[in-house]
Amino acid sequence: MGDYTQLEEGDEVRATGKLLQVPVGKGLLGRVVSTLGEPLDGKGPIQSDVAYPVENLAPESSGDVPLDNRCKRHHGDRRYDPDWPWPA
Image 1 (cartoon, rainbow, N blue to C red):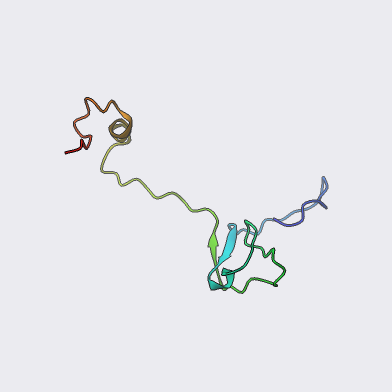
Image 2: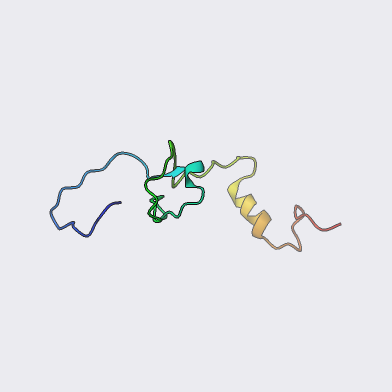
């Protein structure tokens, strides 16, 4: 996630072992930052002690309705679906 223009075939690269994170908090108020949270406004580094991951795992299914029934309920033929919430 740094300067990739100087990389050439055969160069050694190493993984950090961390997920991509961006700074969060009051230090970002009024600042112009890139999508990676890097300052673009020339006001110096972002003052933040907290960083959140860019991507999170999706929450697990609640498991109360089988997946095939869930798809039918929300995308099925609404004229014959007894579970569809019809207007009063």
